[in-house]
Length: 474
Image (cartoon, rainbow, N blue to C red):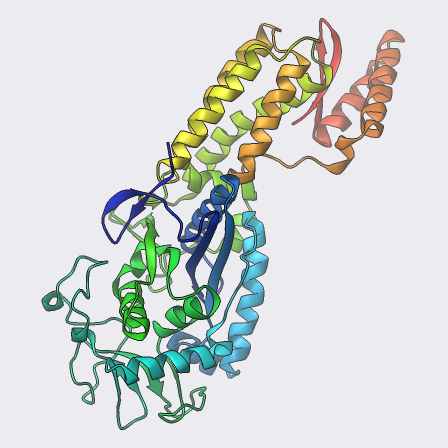
């Protein structure tokens, strides 16, 4: 089975065929940096982190770009409220962004372009749009895009021109030729940050930055463009139009959109998590209660395109479910260290089946929920083998190798401390186990129990078995 992606543009699940064999060019719309990121942002960030990881797992060389909108009405308004420069405000929040995403176990993108540092590319694209008859300048120094010149405008959002009486984030302007036209360049207003352009001082419209960044860093047409499904209209629709006007080509072959994170209101109905509704939960606050593995598991245990309801009770459920996987993982580590000798045998076959199920799930439009179920099925089988004492050391090692491989995609299993990778740590544990045995033989139970309890506090449990005392990390 080859990788298939649900393409928003065609509303079909399509086989993924890259533009260039073995390589993937991928762009995901980032955040507008006027505040801390919240859990709604985190869903998109983690979703496309996993998409990128799985493409790499399949062997693709991925170039991953995600942007910062650091010039925007919200940024200007917030900066004015605080009496600071808008670019200083956005710079501060970009720094905070990286601190917060580190708490999500997310790998950094290859490139993080910013609107404020992309002005040459943006201005060049606006020039192309005007030169080809798709844009026009107004008396106030703004430039608008002629929406009706794009015959299939609305194809991504499946809307007709008649249904589009507002372009979103654009104030109606008497200088417009058509109310549907949207700004690709905004003439400066008093107190706003601005750049010089052929049309006068001003700043870019929201939509143009992404089209210009994609063209500059990745080329005219890319493989995958992603973002939350709230961006389908007008943002992504307008991006498509801008690129088509500037170069006569399509912007992306595959459009991917994650479902919204929702919260329950007082009336019991769910609504999108957003700052405007003030129903959001900051990543910083959630990460103070739950580790990165639990947060990732919470999102990945639902298909990325489905809506997802947030609440602390949902996080606690995710934490409890993940603990079952962790317990199995720790037992496997103990078996790989202390288990009986023998061939991998049945365990190798179980790992191979799990890999097949995992790959089939991920190939089916990155179905992480089904992929995780493959890990739970493997955990149930290996738990049974360990209970029956039929899992060998070699078998446990084989399963752990598989888990390490697939967790390079999911990022939900605990990372081992470096000290556990050498014999010194094992030797120290053996000394403590022998010491506890001697203390128990001498009926000094108080000190023997102290060793056991202190180790437990440090995250290690001792288990008395018929084969002697075993230890594992909890």
